[in-house]
Length: 615
Ligand code: CA
Image (cartoon, rainbow, N blue to C red; front, side, top):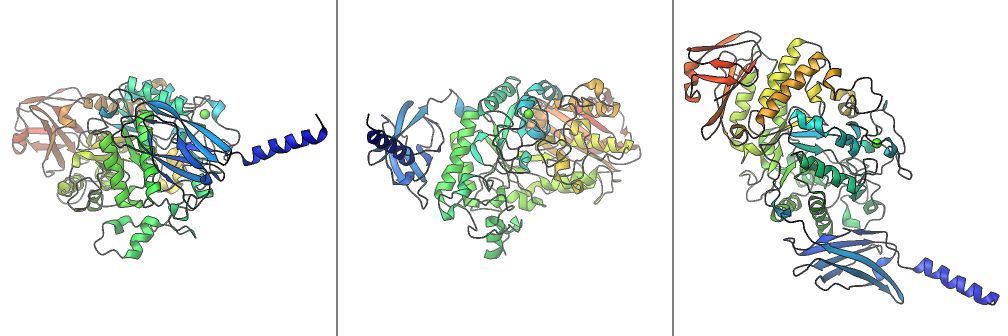
């Protein structure tokens, strides 16, 4: 071949390489036939792809609309799957003679996929921060090419190496404790240069962070958790993404984000979402301001953003086999879009449950966010489960004060629960002593009374109305104060790393006090499982009298009566007061396993102790 021809050939080859249609990402990678919502958005991302003509080779899926936005690097392909059957086909992008073929698949759904039972008041959620629970695979601690390429267990704001394998290795421990569901703090990719361990700055909505494992390893973990009879709740974040997401570094359109021109921080005053007197400026700042500078605020009023997020959650439910979602910063996102999201998820999965992070400091504000709230009408959030943050504050103080009839100790609980009239469904409140963002309930001050406070709180949490959540490590008395910084609220579970000096997964290595706490919680948790008086029962309580708080949970002919002594002194109560909830003259105390005789006119209860009486 002559030299000139070789040069010509090389030139053609180089030109083809430069100008060939380049697709970086297709999301979602696949979908399913037979979903209730027949519309599918396929996002194609790649250099200058928007000038392509788009066609598909599908037999049953049809193109509904091809949307091109301001950026030349995106195509939003909307497909109509009304009559779609499972099939493999190609999406074809054509620019003149240049052609790109993208294989796509509409899969068959697993039988019964729509019928999954979401978490409910029969469950207790165990909250795990995956980076901090256990490192089962040190080879994935640092992944080449990712921005935060270090592990330092002495630094509470750096990754520690925990992963799916670590959780998988300790499922027997979690199951033995007696919880029935695991809520994972976010597991999606956070390719941020620092602070990526907590997971709240998503950089890929369709891939788990490789430092936890692969998508397949996540699905395998979910399956293993299901095999052990437990459910899985996945943390999702619609309000914002991480600033290294390509949505932000290469925006599909200017209005993809709120405050697109300059960084404006949210006021965190989501009160403005329900406040009848709120100014437009306050409403805008709370919802459209960014959570922090590294988390750009997604504009959910943009229909393509809304569709993308809704579809992403459904993809994870279907692909990952989820039983629930915890939605981060729920009130910071657009009310109407979030409402639409909850509705669409429920249409696909009627019994699925979502809990929104409604971090508001009073029950009126929290109740506004619950499905069918009369306070929000005629609007409806469609959000079944909300977080009872105010109860956390009540419990913080209730169990070590000397109870008075009005506002101290058990009176706090009595008065607070009496206000449940504001809630449309108090049984669908997530209740907790603490979580990854708050001080841990247990105070490490070495007092015996502190353990008693803890035990009363656990007994109350696991027997009152609502869906309890236990933050990992609570069972072994992990303590931390928010004043130390958020990283310290998320310390490693001792024994989760090879070479840890103590392995608290083993009873023999726990302190006597840790075992006392663990065994106490385990006993109540395992008794609670399948107990309909607790999961489905009514709640009836009595005003604290003589420092003692008494309540009943009842379902059909099964009932449980809880007696909490909110005093530093032994107390005797007059049983005649409680006769309407004492169907028999004896009952078994679940905690001591003793038969308690209720024949006498009175009952004596030791200082700060608890009876859980089962009839
Ligand atoms: Ca690891």
